[in-house]
Image (cartoon, rainbow, N blue to C red; front, side, top):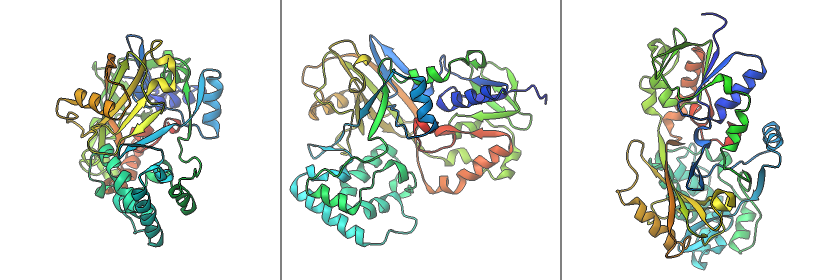
Length: 424
């Protein structure tokens, strides 16, 4: 292989573009292959009749550090900072999110049960290596677990929660102290919680502004409408969907890990620790985002709302125009409705649109008579990684085996993890 071979990056989403920027600055020859007709991955924004729809909620939760400084610096004056306004719709009541710090808004009998069960759980010993279900009961008590933690995540992850381990909760699920839980039971405000207590969002144009910024100056090294269908790890060659072969010195893949494993044709890599049929052992849930443009305002001012109860087919609703009024024509509003489903199976039973409208009206989000004047259905075949025992036992070996063949699998789906845009 010639030393002139480039580093090839599969995917021009946030992770791929960030890697390309870093390599370009280090004067490394690089080529980005993107199957879509523009960059961004799931951080694209689709426009329909004057409405701008993201692939559901893509918000910038920026911690202190280099990434925050870079994004805020390069998008200076183009971002608006928001303080989270989110709720859980439960028992016909809007409870401020996170519910574990605000359950005092529930009916008095439920409040008593929540704090009673939490006190019991606090005295018990956390199980060793628990499932998510056992972790939720031990962390918050049976009542809160049964009201929200278990049913909501069952709708989101689809697969049995008894087979899920809870390591992903370390940064994503707020955990109030015992004192703060007692404050919640008394109806007092214990303060803000969670990684998403505040966020940034573009003032104009939708979240696609972010990959647009990252791709600045990279047009000459990004090949659009170019998908990869095969990877020969022995020869270090990728084959594109138009039949071209491209050699590489190293390969950085941001494609979902199961799809990457299916593309690699060199069988000897199994000796490096990759289990047979590894792609099939990695589970995930898929999500469809139903994006709706309405002819008038919505009735809620939340940024997003969680729906744990089974009588609603969706697990979350977000209001685009509560992020930025610029995402809809003047006087109109827009929202997204998220429905999870098993990969390869359609969501719902064919009447999902009707069920969604009925649910939005019954929850008091849109008034009777409000018309949908624009819509877009956005499919996310890979949405949430399922943290089961197989992932825990085999992921490190799979990624190490790829690295031995000069393949780095990175990003939320490449590294097969639950992470935020900032991490990419």
